[in-house]
Image (tube, rainbow, N blue to C red; front, side):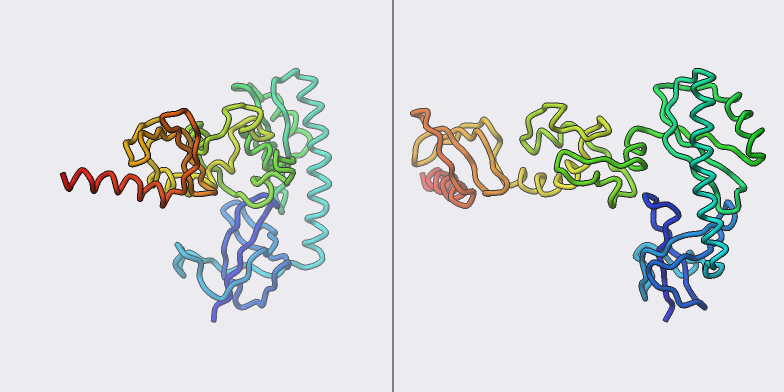
Length: 276
């Protein structure tokens, strides 16, 4: 049986799948794999006996070898180099008065390339900055502009819920989040309440949207009046968690009605019409 492993090159990076054979690998091990950019050291985060959904056996490449003590030491040196490069690049940015914010630095395992991640409000002419960095490190240099969500994913932060941001903990890809989701979930449209530490709409709005969409299909339109055997009732609110509707009767009194009871009320009225 082929052992399939999922690996990460960065803590907040995506999971990539490889075949472990002929090696025996456990979760937490480090392995050397071949990538389009050359050899890379990766951490094993998933071990499984079957091919993940959406993959074919031909798509899974074997790992190159298990990492040894020298590889681990080399990776530690790369992290130290990344910290040094971060400080130096930030000084160059300040000296050249560039309108950009350095977020993180990644050094390839074989040091064939160093990537500097940054955010900026617009386009930045960083050609002279690249020349400065090439002169110091004598390798390929890439400056990669990222968005504020990716910045939060790299740096981390505590969300409104008091937990570490989802993008840092487990999210690997960002899905679109719209203000309509907040409206569907009956949230107050206060930017401070529905925005994350990145300043964008909360990603968790997307997590819950499917449940709200299903619920919206089962309930009547809010604001509409219905004739029932209890008189005219106007639907003013809906509660997903209680599976109920709040209605306003002809006397201006609010009532909470469970959804099954509401369906029975409307159903009885429809049956009366049919029998006339």
